[in-house]
Length: 110
Image: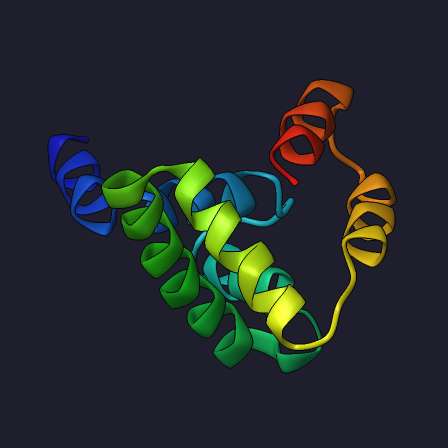
């Protein structure tokens, strides 16, 4: 078990996400990895799942280095620069299936 834990630690947050997806896949062995990656990849299948884990690693590193608030502010500035209004961004956030507390925090920074 120590070897498995060491490998998951090396993978970081994407390793934890993959572990949860595999555990909830309902299958065992190598098929669980295939099903887990395909579930993460959506219509792009396993390759999409691998790409999603890579993107997740980049986002997790950025959040750890800069903090969620700074990243959020930069994304909002980028969205506004590409033509989105604050009202559009607010409406999109309100439609997300996230907790009310997280919505308040995000909208408070908007």
